[in-house]
Image (tube, rainbow, N blue to C red; front, side, top):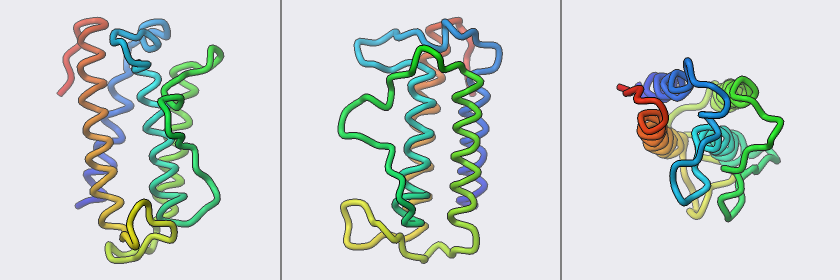
Length: 147
């Protein structure tokens, strides 16, 4: 059930970009560096951090202590970022393949130990929260209301 919710949220995030033009996806409507593309890039980075780095112990850690993972390169497109997100999600699925909810993470973050259940619940919360942010930004940009 946790995996099904995680995948539903991942699909929901991608759906927020349907019919949205590049300029609108970059638009910042808040004082923070938040944009729809920036949120997608951030979600890609947290996928990589939590599933591949923290859980599987791979030597990848795209997160920084600042908001720079919300900064999108000029040459990036929505299609590029969606493709990177989908690759990160596929790699996340692969990283947890065969694990049980009680399987311990190899590089627990700020705790002596965490298991896959913790990582999944955390990522469901993280992805759902940012999907909600994407809904609000999209509505501000063009009036499209999410579900």
